Image (cartoon, rainbow, N blue to C red):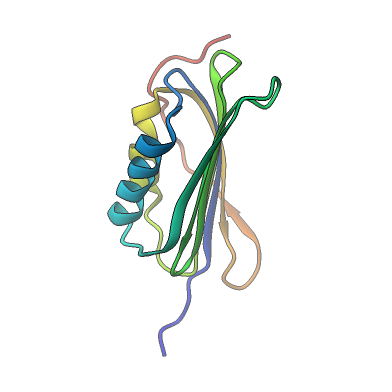
Length: 134
């Protein structure tokens, strides 16, 4: 029996080029899922909110080993992106950060949680695409 790994990364990013279109962003998420070696069970499901204060895109995908969810708020500048990848398999976070570069992040905060036996938080240094906007 294969041991499960239970890895979870939660990312909050401020981005200069946020995803806006449902179809193209769904394709971008599919690319990430393929790149991290996961398989889609359902989705991606994408919807765009046009309500003032919550304007942005949400994309959710159920993968064989758990889920991937992306939310954006693009009324602000830089735009806000929240991104969540949870898997009970190996997760190469470098691939996730490389994928995120397409949105031109200027600031990234994240938590990497090893949920295997207890909730251990691990941090890695990450150099954003552009200089932080003050």
